[in-house]
Amino acid sequence: MKNFKSPLAVVLSAGLILMGTPGVSPAAMIGTERLAAQSQRADTEARLQNLLSREDVQQQLTAWGVDPVQAKSRAAAMSDEEIQRVAATLDQQPAGGDVFGLIGVVFVVLLILELVGVTNIFSRI
Image 1 (cartoon, rainbow, N blue to C red):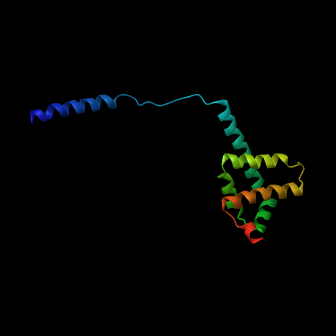
Image 2: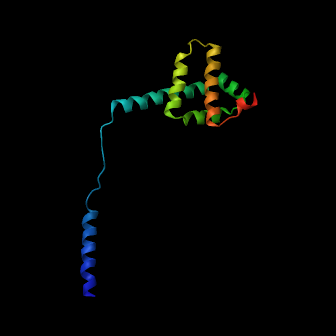
Image 3: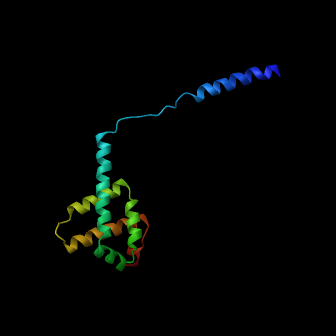
């Protein structure tokens, strides 16, 4: 029994000592590029969500057989690359309520949803 107490005491002592030491937590500076990319993604995502919240866009999505709520959730789940493509398309569209611009944006969103596999709009045409 004495042979068992000595190693047990050493293990318990080491455990108690190690419990008192704080864990290591890595910390680093956030780079400007990373912060700018996150900010740009948030801005573009907000623009896209605002576009999908418009009544005329929701009516057009419904006319094409796409649930607007599902389109919003899929737009929120887009990757950074997809968000950048949509942003580039939105930036190229003329301002001022151009109907063709709106149709173009909706088409791009539907195309992305089709490529992701959410809808089967273009297979019916």
